[in-house]
Image (cartoon, rainbow, N blue to C red; front, side, top):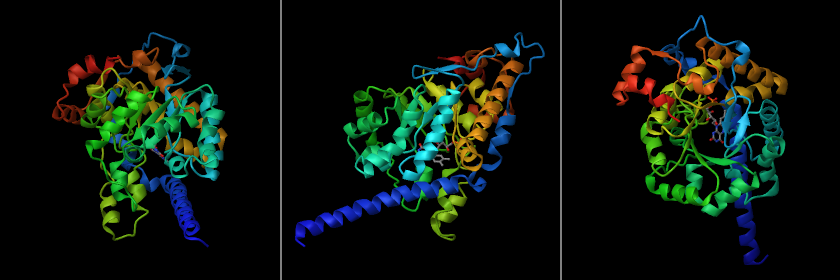
Length: 390
Ligand SMILES: Cc1cc2nc3c(=O)[nH]c(=O)nc-3n(C[C@H](O)[C@H](O)[C@H](O)COP(=O)(O)O)c2cc1C
């Protein structure tokens, strides 16, 4: 064998090994993320008790008049819901992405794909791309959102990101920020310095579609949102600390007793609860479209998050879990119940549509008022003006 051929074989082996590593990590992540031990404690029930929509004994409308439609990225959705990005990159994930997309198309809700890093790593290999593209092929009449980590963005050029959007015919791309996950992940990438912002700016200028900034479950703060809002980002997905906890998912991938394992356990309550993350995001991005996600797992929580300032909600784990444990029908029933609960909360608050829900009275508990004051947000101004902006 000549030297060139040996080098080529070594290179190929490296590519195949790194592919397997990312694909297998995705499968491992899915298995662990579905474990209830990795959820935030009580799913923030204490915070939700602090935000009350006021019951109206005379709602002033019939239940059938309640309209939960929402417009997102130019599509008219039947409900203000997005199935947020989870999967793709492994042949066995084609069928899962197909089921998620079938659900999104049937219920007319938005859908995201999981991190497209595997496409980059595979050098746009056809079967890897296909595991994501199935989402658009199945969900033709709803928004499809691409997905890339901030650190992957750091390492690739803007044309490659544009290609990632094109190969799956996405309507936008979400850039995920996940420092708590990366710091606990055994193979984590903890580069989160601001020099990446030039890349984000370049992407915003070159991509003819919107860029969305999302967390993965520890919440967006006003400081983080301000950095992106200043360069023109107008869509945010809070992914607050009330649902799936990715630091805990990664903890379970470490050896008990190791620094990462012990530290990860201590992050079990770390982060910004979803409704607070919505408030912080709206406070600095009044003109933006805000998706409240992170444990927004029923229609009442959805109503609270919209009333407090969101335009839409995002759900990840319960949908995937329903599909994997019980099949598509159960997942559909879950969404039907969810929408019925949202409509009921709106009816009982006297809100005819999503816009009206944002102006209905809310009573805040002392704890949440204190948190807002400490963050420099005047609760009165926020409730009477800011949350209703846009
Ligand atoms: C199995 C699974 C895989 C996920 N993969 C990704 C991903 O690749 N990219 C991303 O931005 N978020 C990913 N997420 C995070 C979700 O999009 C969402 O932000 C987070 O789980 C909070 O929502 P939830 O509490 O409804 O699960 C994943 C979540 C789950 C459950």
